[in-house]
Image (cartoon, rainbow, N blue to C red):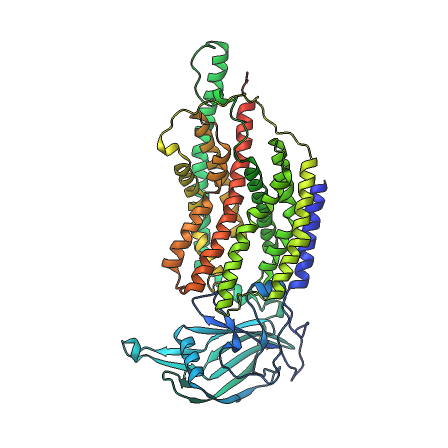
Length: 592
């Protein structure tokens, strides 16, 4: 009952945080009168194919507004790399403008070089108008000459804003650049340029609460949905065939084993012992490195809880498109609030395994996932600082995260650990463990840990790989992913296949009289994380146009942390499923 209350309180706390974190413009109710100033913020610029490599809008020598004002951002927005400042355009409600001058300026050789380098890398800009995102390219490359030295580089100097409104609310905004209003920035010479913009207002019947729908429609188009459903059907068929096949084999083999062992006990007690029944004195022998094992289980359980809560929030509609930073805030807040689960699980299991140094175990649990993540962050944040990219976190944000870790995560971890130590639960082993371990017979190479991990990871990966492309294109590209219900089904399938394949491999390992199944079941369950990381290599080089040291280090650095998280989470699922199975089969026979 206390556990249910804790989960309910956690969910309420997360929803309260989100109520505070959702992005709000200056006009909080989004209602305007004729001539009212509607907030327009310039966010960032960057190479189109490198989503992590973004810079402040005014890092390029655009026209400055009369009054520069930075928008205060929530934690999630800063983590997302958003740095909103006043834009130089004045888009007042229902006021049309035709070729209005933003500013006239003479670009120096250095500024021309900056713009040319940006145009060469396909730079885009992003702004927010009344919380609606808008994008546009800053220029174009004329590739009429075949040789790159003959290419011409042009900067767009005239922007057209088409704004749709319904009564007193802004519904939609589109931005386009005039392909005829160009500034040649091919050569290193001073250029006089006049930046202009045009604003047109059009009425629409679309209600205000549907204005975000157009951003999510791209992932709900019929041909995309067909691919998603094909992915699910493919996964389900794989699951049904494999689980059916393995279940039939396991049930028949186990039934025969039970009959055989029952018959053996009644008749020839002196016959030679083989099979899983005869290692009953070793199968519940505690694993090596039990502190690390318990810490891995604790971290894996916490990450599993975190994933479930993220799915709940996604399914109730918290992560609508361009709710900037909501996902990052969710991850930070929920991870901090669930650290007590990691402490409790790790310490209680460690004490069940008769571990004595529970304080060291608790420290290991706290650092097992956070440690590598922190080191990766330090390196990547340094890279971002060198590049002066917006991905570099400001000092204030780092202080906030450290305070959350110090004042929330660590105390909850310790409280969970104390509760786990005091729970005094005993390890439920149906068989007594012998004093000396039985020797494991020599086994063929394919029974080794690495070949078994390869077999165990391939199956769950094959059930999710189609959906992986869409997730990667959303996280590391400009697609928008909104079909969370399908993603949740795929996640459930992933858990089922992971549990089933790990149980099957554990059975075959025990049948070969190899009783060291604890770590093996964890490693086999988690091996899907290694396959996902291998997919990262394929995606980066074959399916994306990402390039440059910063983007490469961000992609492989953060994906390593995510795949490591999957390894811990699925390893925990694999071990828990195997433990249930092993307890069940040894409870079903008589052990001397």
